[in-house]
Image (cartoon, rainbow, N blue to C red; front, side, top):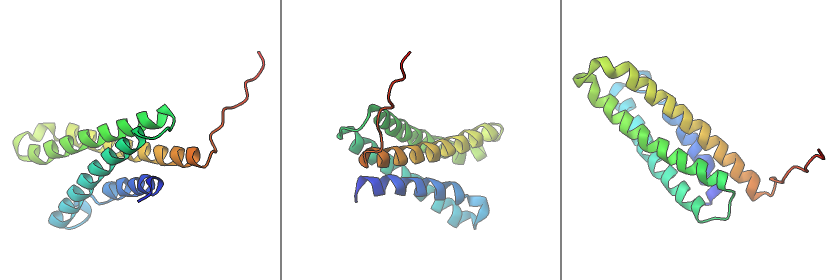
Length: 134
């Protein structure tokens, strides 16, 4: 798959991971769909980061891809803690839920930014702005 397609696919995957929340569907089906989408998102963000490291893209895109991949790792850890913590540490649930939601939104925002920026770079739409005389 071409990198730009995978980057835009990551945006949609992040979006659907946010949308398919276990409370909105049958708890078993929704939970497992959410877990599977999260795992696929983890793998794809890692692949995207590695792919961009090998290309002569601007360093900002490489940093965004690494940060997005890091968020995906944190998201999985946070999701697992949230899932296990429901029975073990009920008092920590609001904090874990908020961290999970904020991280999901960060992944969505970062992956959107990355896909658009890469597309613009690939199409040569990135150009340095002319410097204004002082």
